[in-house]
Image (cartoon, rainbow, N blue to C red; front, side):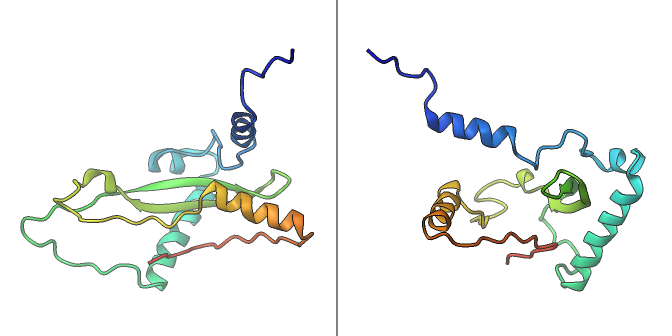
Length: 147
């Protein structure tokens, strides 16, 4: 009688994805103060300037007076090291993100939307590429505004 494996293959795939996830980098700064005081501070400062410049060029925000009775949404910097397929440093990326978690559903907002793809969608595309022997190209959008 054949013994079943204790961990199903689905979990093994997820474990492999976790181990090979290039977005996980323990050396990325987690705060503004870490970014400006580390060895790569010039690269992080340039990345922050580039992010602010792209927001200005794409007319992302307007400076307005806060209406009475409203609470502002804070923001923070998120830092990621982008690497090429060989694992070499390609560039430093800084994103200025809203602290949306400070808002309360039904009080500060009515609905949310986050355009992300599902793993199953990615797997279907990969299966079609393999089945029909297609070529697949990857690209990186430097600054995307999905609104």
